[in-house]
Amino acid sequence: MRRVSAALVHYPVLDRQGAVVTTAITNLDLHDIARSAHTYGLEALYVVHPIAAQRELAGKVKEHWTEGSGARRIPDRTPALRALEIVEALDDAVAALGRDAELWTTSASARNPSLTHAAGRERLAGDGPPVLIVFGTGWGLAEAVCERAHAHLAPILSQRDDGYNHLSVRAAAAILFDRLLGGR
Amino acid sequence: MRRVSAALVHYPVLDRQGAVVTTAITNLDLHDIARSAHTYGLEALYVVHPIAAQRELAGKVKEHWTEGSGARRIPDRTPALRALEIVEALDDAVAALGRDAELWTTSASARNPSLTHAAGRERLAGDGPPVLIVFGTGWGLAEAVCERAHAHLAPILSQRDDGYNHLSVRAAAAILFDRLLGGR
Image 1 (cartoon, one colour):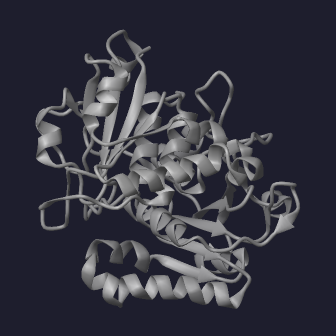
Image 2 (cartoon, rainbow over the protein chains, first blue to last red):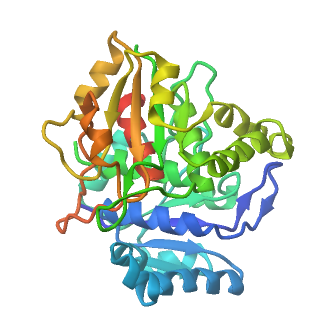
Image 3 (spheres, each protein chain N blue to C red):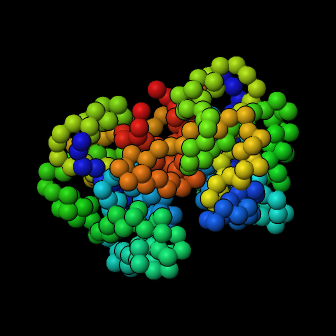
């Protein structure tokens, strides 16, 4: 079984027009994805943000739930939020995991070649370097992140005839963790 | 294929101590679960709240994304939020679906007997009355809802040795829709 972590990237990501932008941190992203990641046995959730004030905000959310009054009120959240790591750039996450760590990007649209979820599941169950599953906020990861990735996970396809497929990053992360690591 | 909808219940649900309470509406629940439900082909997401002012709030969220400036800014959200139905009680959702509709409850803890996700998937793929998948906010659905249910879906089990299992209702709904209705 390989070591698995996730990263939530706020830069470089795309906006609606496809321009590269920095997005703001959404409090509930940190909670939801940290709780899902911890439930599925991931080691850490790296929150990637280039702006110091935004990293401080994420740090305060973490502190509230690991040491502050949130930890006393709802102690169930503590282990999940303790696994939140706040970093300036994706390279900081890679450095923490080890230089051989593999980046697996995610997207709502197909990329060629892509790694099916079944094949990804098999790879994670085997031996190999740590894997960092990378999620983009906004309208998805910028090309610069995808280009350096070791694999692109296939998108979660819509079940509708009209192809409607607009999952939140919180929902997409939960579904992917379940497909890659969930009990069968 | 059976018709499937979901309900998000704010009363009667449990608090941390197991008392029956009414919870407040969380804006992002409506968005996330509506988007997940629509992506997986569910007909509607019923938001159940006994307090008129809270139903009005949910109605304003819906209006913003189906008719207001939100609809113009991010039109992708419109079809999902259009399928949001705001009702006073679970019975209103059942009445809208038809008297023969089946309630399938969800929970983070096991209940005996429970419907496995594989068996639920088979049932949905066959013929039969409409199904309403019922999610509780707070610390889960009150016994009064579970007692009248036609089936109790098995919990999503933790993959960790310590059994940590604290998914948000948004994440749990996304995973269950995928297990019951996702492409395989």
